[in-house]
Image (cartoon, rainbow, N blue to C red):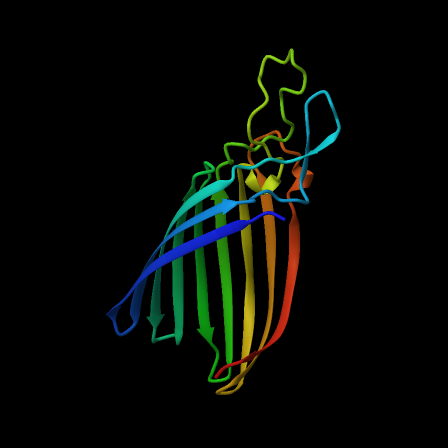
Length: 209
């Protein structure tokens, strides 16, 4: 057994700029400590070919700034929501997320919401597809921390699709949606096959109280 502790604090400021415009600003600070490894991830050392458990730092701070703006257009009975998120952590990852969603009402009982999301990040300081320093004669010493988790590499993702919502009454809604998810590596070293792509279909029932 290994302990893991996570603490997050968030400050949110929301402001109506007009009857049809709203802006929101969030700041989050988080701290993780303890066992932060992924027990299902292994890594190979150069010249070895044998799998070893990864070793990540036992401490992580993160800072996140998020801003969103929602504008309602009365002439078409729709709203546009745009957001931007900046993330940094002590593992050396900087990331940027931008998203646009159009909320279009098609009468009182139907709404369609196309959306597009872009995410990009730098690599963690301890990301290695293969760890150097397996042999004592290697010119590069073995690092203290290492992981081959592709999610820690330099990458970007695209996520786009649409959701259809049917309003049955004030408390019940039916939701159906599709979106395409693509992840692409940028370091030129990690195999492209490591990055997933998916077609995601969603069908659900939403109950509001």
